[in-house]
Length: 185
Ligand code: RP5
Image (cartoon, rainbow, N blue to C red):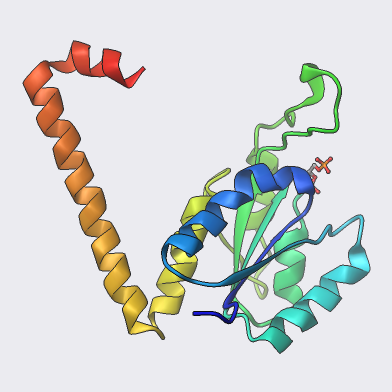
């Protein structure tokens, strides 16, 4: 797939530390995506412009990540009929000089509530705090309704997950819990 089917947006360059996991999953499944920074409060006019752009490009899903009061996913959803998956981000502000100010006071709960509690009429499905990979996976699931090859890849992905748990469990049984846990460190 060459044409971007998913638009990934985030409120700040600092969100890229988390949001890249969505891109990695989409890359694994061979789903092309376009990635941009759109700040709802610093570039408000870009919100509606981006929604128009997304519709024009024919994106089928938008993944939107934001931290703090996190209005980006909801506002994008209000501007377009394209389904939006929101990623609440625990703010890590790399522009701050002191460690004290690097994380948000509410550890991502602020963004989680802000994104998931959209009023009736403009829904945003929400993944867990910092769970950008799940957003990527969910986007693939939506696309799999239309692209059968993605359905097969998702089944394979499930099989791989199953096998990796069995492999670890076999090792744990073989070497014992204490040694296994020691090796995990
Ligand atoms: C939000 O504010 C962004 O989504 C980001 O998570 C947070 C902090 O942004 P920076 O101060 O790092 O630019 O708008």
